[in-house]
Image 1 (cartoon, rainbow, N blue to C red):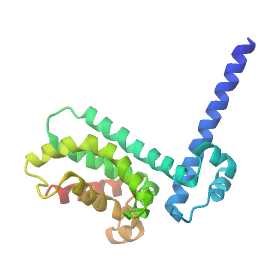
Image 2 (image 1 turned 90 degrees about the vertical axis):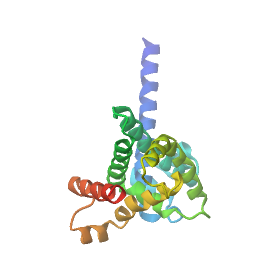
Image 3 (image 1 turned 135 degrees about the horizontal axis):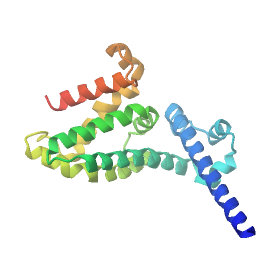
Image 4 (image 1 turned 60 degrees about the vertical axis):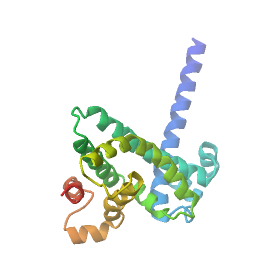
Length: 210
């Protein structure tokens, strides 16, 4: 009986630890998006989460390690969604599958604008942050690239290589989200609303597949 109680307490402790880590990640996501990497202070994240600077370091290490954990967290969500879209796609129509991938990407980017801003904050080749994001995004490219090559055989995007297409797509999808206030004013629609996401998705797809 005593051993069962100890195991139960241990499990609760692990659950509490995971909950704390997720709370820190969510707070870090918002602060990195608002302040950028260099202006972000771990103590600010600690204040927001009601934890301590030392506890953040215990769970994640340095500020750079926390940043990488935030990037992993965001890209893992995209990877899971892409794999789900691929699994649910029943036909052999590669064009429709790529459209579904893009629609999923637009939706996730709009529903996670902080993560979108983090990627756009650190988009210079001289930054190790940029290198880390580019390396991690290769996991997404592995899923999409075979589909993209099949779409090219259908006569689309022949002027692009795979990486060039993704740079173009990122700019097309994410720039309006990062410049959301201006985009909302020009489009007359809240880009992050359900209707706004649907409209943005339609515009992107119509532009890519006229």
